[in-house]
Amino acid sequence: MNDDAPLMTIQGCLEEAVKVLREAGTVSPRLDAEVLLCHILHVDRAQLLVRVHSLLTDRQLRCFRQWVARREFHEPVAYIVGEKEFWSLSFYVDRHVLIPRPETEILVEEVLRILPGIDRRPVRILEIGVGSGAISVALATTKENVQMVATDISAGAVAVAQRNAAKADVAEKIRFVVGSLFADLSGVFDVIVSNPPYISDEEFLGLPDDVRKFEPSEALLGGAEGISLHREIIAGGLRYLAAGGYLVMEIGATQRQRLEDLLGETGSYTNISCRRDYAGCDRVILARRL
Image (cartoon, rainbow, N blue to C red; front, side):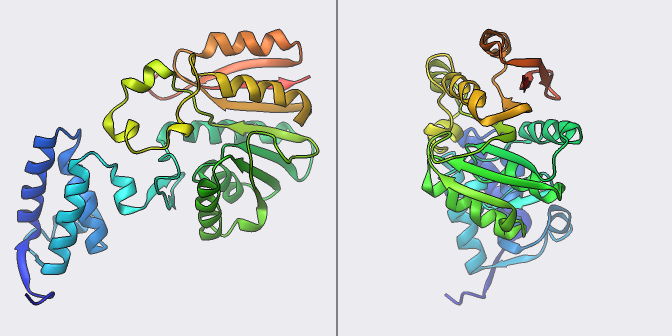
């Protein structure tokens, strides 16, 4: 068959895909189908919807059906298309990294809020667990006077983050390190920011297939209580945070009190506070190094 022979309209393709994805139990079958087809046709959703009677070529149809089949087995759309938006930037993602979530933008917002109170230029920021690079890249593109170090235990994740930093033209502002937590670091930082794994072992079993079967478990699992990495970052901050520096971490919805207690028990942190996300859940905990 000729690869350029038109076979089916956009509307027909979407209807077929929505039926398949609805039967598979995906949460948003219509949206998923539209996003997949938009990437294949290189159009936005508004353009797609005004072209519903346009015909697809055989090549486009085959690609779309292959992608729909992957989504039918609950592979996240972001991995299928290799892209996710965060902080109004487009990030490459693959299965080495967690897919950036909108609520993590609150972590970026909180770091930006405290930066004017740090009397140092450039401000030194350390990100623990860089993943796709969403947080570090967002900060580096927003603020000029920052010098960043970003670490991750996964070499695959660091490679993805480096790719995204280059794409955003901020590669020279971020030094990437493959290593666990504070390994191979020296000096002190004005801000330590992290979205560490915070899913407990029990919670992990109840996650949707999209997350549990496809996203990297090492970036999700935070031990029995979900705060194992938070504990280590709090302890590491005693050595690696400058006096007056800030620790900013994303947390699970039920972890605020325990982490506030841990920070207080050190005797070395003050101004402990928590920011909720737009759904009203505790999301980001902050503390200042004495």
